[in-house]
Length: 359
Ligand code: SF4
Image 1 (cartoon, protein in one colour):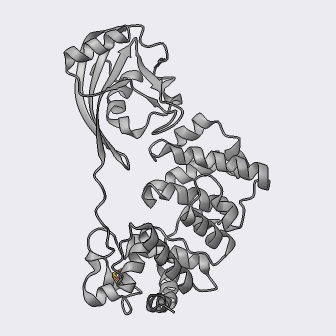
Image 2 (cartoon, rainbow, N blue to C red):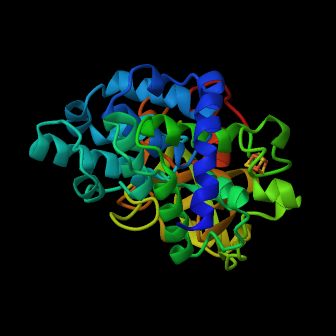
Image 3 (cartoon, rainbow, N blue to C red):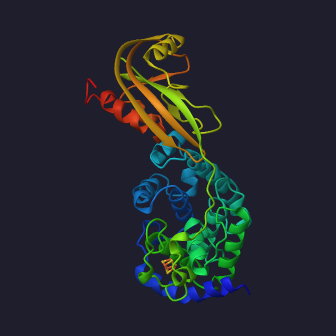
């Protein structure tokens, strides 16, 4: 047996004992179900626990079962997701729910192969569902668990490398206890979130792994896990037009596939345009600026791309492009505008709901 597995095995008893005292009281732990575990884990992939809690509660109230999610209105689903980002995850949830409703009568499958075949469910989520909801001995290894495993074993393998991640997963799998598997995985999640922290100083004196942790022994906690530098993101410059006409704002729908697919956005064009060039662009949409209200800049980071945006809030006249719609204070809420445009939305929302008649 690998010495790393032996080291991780020594963690089991103190970890579970620690978990019995310090476990976090979270809504999806109060009444455990495969559906609730799935929804919570997908939400937690992109957002911190405290922010997820109200989203989870609203989501479960709106769609309490797999079948309810399968039958949900997609626009309503995306509205509930607004603020969590990565809308493709919400779409995948619904696609998977439809498959589960049709193929499994609405009950989440309980085998790894069936779960992993569903849209949006990867190794980590399958492990979480199988261990937490069905008591199976399957690890759930995410960035938190990789960090803990690297520190406890003192491993200097690059955790961003797929092959290395498989090795870490195998170590955790071999070190898992036969009983309390769901609690074991949740204890690792809690340890990573509250004690063996990613940024700043891990709280080693409060850690149940204190006696066995190689990183602590060697004083190299902050150097682990090893992450080789990622490639720089591609930067895209955009000019965003927040066009107001008669108390309504212009929105257009993004293409069916790709980044932020099918969501609604303010019209924009590549490049950074000054006012003269922006007015020329508006002519192409059969519009003229009546009043330039505000110019502002915003930045948004996606996984591989960064948007650097220059935006103009303009009172405008004219028809606009044929595929746009004009949303007023009442109708705007029906359309999910991604958080990438939040800075512009914050400017325009008070105008649409009539709180502010001038900017
Ligand atoms: S002893 Fe410190 S570095 Fe090691 S697992 Fe615990 S918190 Fe992390």
